[in-house]
Image (cartoon, rainbow over all chains, first blue to last red; front, side, top):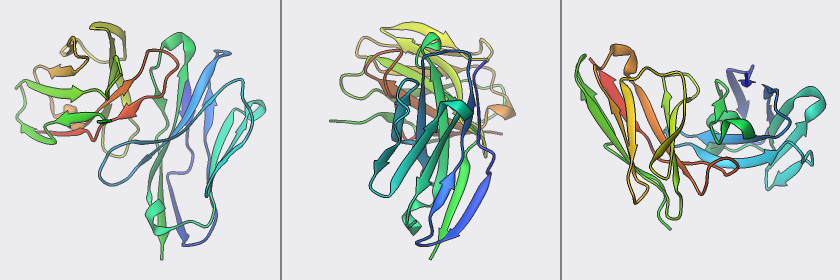
Length: 115
Length: 113
């Protein structure tokens, strides 16, 4: 069965600090997809990134970067020079090709960036 | 391009009642999924609809049911409401089932008293 673990329940940083959110996943499928979503207080889940299991290249988008390592089943998310607007709950999610596009989410990490 | 919309935004019901939540998918998307998010937890998959047919179901009882219409909009119906049904209900649409990214609506907050 698929499972996603986000061990960090809450993280608090000061603006301009770098912060890494951890995500560890479990799956028996060889083809799967990993996602990160951001959930601000309004509640809507905002899509940030999708990676497939065959593409282990790290990705950078502005202040955001993602480190995908199949050897450790991890898909970590780093925010560089954090800003107050980054404060939100961040979810890591997994979907297996054999399960359609059903997403399994972790419990989320509440990130608070203080000015 | 219009994103995913949901209605109503908030709802209060009493135990035993029935509720219908609505979702309009993003333009060009034919797959709709529903998730339940209890306070402080990650979203849990309820079911998915693809071209008006149920295409997968999570671990939810039969009193959770749904529909998808020809225009790909969708409804989530919950009968015999229980206190534990209080949650944020999220709808997501995607261009096709399987490999595509799901885009979420703002959700409906349901409170059962």
